Image (cartoon, rainbow, N blue to C red; front, side, top):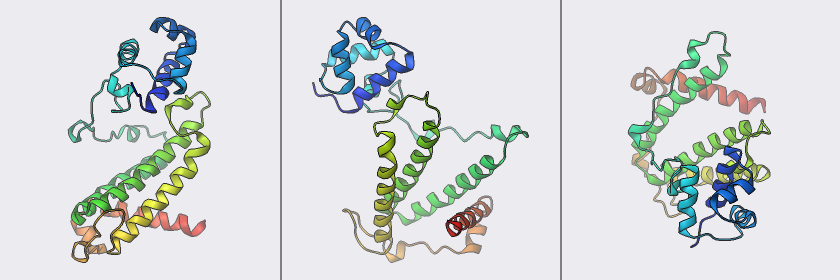
Amino acid sequence: MIVNATFPRIITLLRKERGFSQKKAATDLGISQALLSHYEKGIRECGLDFVVKVADYYDVSCDYLLGRTADKSGTTISLDSIPDSPDSLLEQPEADLSPVLSKKLIINSLHILFDILQQCDNRGVSTEASAILTLSVYSVFRHIYAANSKNLKVMFSLRDDMFRPEVVAQIIKSSSRLTTLCAGRPCKGYEPLPAEKAPLILHDALAREYPLFASSLFNLLKNAEALLEEN
């Protein structure tokens, strides 16, 4: 059986999360430590029966082991299953309010941005815009994650010294593709954004249409340009 590259990383992560030595896990799974080492390094391929045995051992789904879902139970995410963002930080007056403010600015701005993307009705534009946002969140999370040396390195497939240039390169690519599509030219197999679909975005119109969120977007834009100008 051919197991994808995700499997070795996940079985290593699960073992280390449990605090099991390689010797203990191998013994419990009924294989040699050398063979488990090969599985964890991706040197050897295992059979389906071993995948099932590992799933039972760590109480996770086979889909999770194979990277088909990010949920250990095998549940796939749906729109209805995504909870609303909690405002628990607001109940802590002694906390630094800077991250709370940034959170609200970003979330409220994204509400408007995704509304506009929906109006564009263009798969390529939505795909590349989402890629930029996804990679930005991923990058910030990895930086914070790396701050504590006790956090397990095997949570990610890209090494610490590799993800930064990879993220930057991919964001540049997606940004370039988005520019091309919004300029009315096809790119990467996607149809361009037609001129008639390009939304007319006016300050006052945004304020009228999004009375709860427009001020957040305006402040975010201002803050972003201040950052760009000072750097």
